[in-house]
Image (cartoon, rainbow, N blue to C red):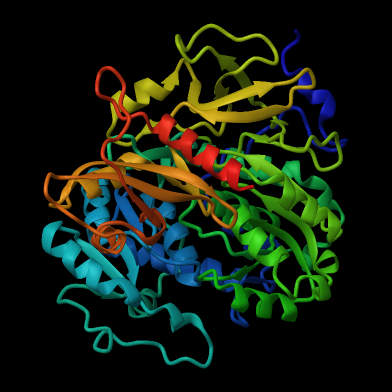
Length: 556
């Protein structure tokens, strides 16, 4: 069969190959500021920052960081929600050739310790609401520069915080003061090659500690171009002055990083920032915005909005140019719901390791419900026999999905063993089992690995097991994902107790509170006499999942 036979299903204006810009990522801000200086780049609860002013603040922060000794190759942790401070910190660090380490604000001190140690993070941007965790972290890990902001510091009408109010430790820096003190608006002169690392993006790890996918400037530019050109019809029909995106996906997640933050910079689109997902707040926000050109989200968010009592009366089909789903498989029922409401809808597949992009359904071409679509430009896929990882399976047969393309990561940070496991001769082994049909459309059927996807977050159960095993009464534990209408999957823990012990579900869940981020905590606990295992004593999660599926099948 000819290679890339799926090209025939591309939209009329999507190229089959792309010439990628050979520029560092922060250059996107410069291009936007040069072309639309007065247009709002960011809008946070009504407070706007123009592209011109944003560029100026990014350059000043880059020079402030240089003054603190940050240099090319250093790791800079960005531990912030979707606020102007995140955008400034992200592009300022990259302007120096430093590597941004994306950190989820929900991580516990223990999780942050593992990740900052693994990456050798020497500078950390963080915020007022998580300072107890950061104080604890800094007692155990030496971080040279800690820069703190208050979430509301960039909202008109709120007083800007002071270092005294935030009770900053000696030697810590205050974000707004640091920015004020830096008056140098000359961009730093740092040679950055497109193949230099730009971002460390964490993804679940089978051994407890998440793995850091190293994404280069070229990876990010390639993925941004893919996101832009795959939805090309959206921009060709939207004047630059009217381009905007609802920035509800967290920037610390690879999907939000590419499909919101960098997509918006590339297209001079205003980002309407949403620092947290609260459904009533979101519905109120949507009521007050006449038009959103592009709205990428995970199925959990989409479900909450489309099934909200107000959804019918709000004329969402008039508000949304394109609603895009990613981050987790989208239930067909939800796609049907979008159609019933006349909302333009698209779905795609990507991973942290593929810089969020990889396979997607065309917007105007053939769409197949239940399929994640066809490979995007300059990407190839092979489905291989999971038992040997080499033999290609026949069309229509199940195989492990492997992918190769310009947005595939350069490897895992500080983890040559995992890199060698998952990257072979330029092919990324995804751990997803899939089927490809005669038109090139890909259907995910299973996972070779046991990852749980809840609310768009990738969760590896081993990490949860490790915490459960630390409970003094627990003998054995296994966490699995069980189907959940709202979250996609929710976490259930199966536990056997030590002889003579008794425990409650509440006690186990409470134990996990300070050790796991909220989305990783078990929501259901089942106590068992024994947990199914293979002949070599390996826990058979597959069997536990099958039991749960059978139960839910009987229920429905």
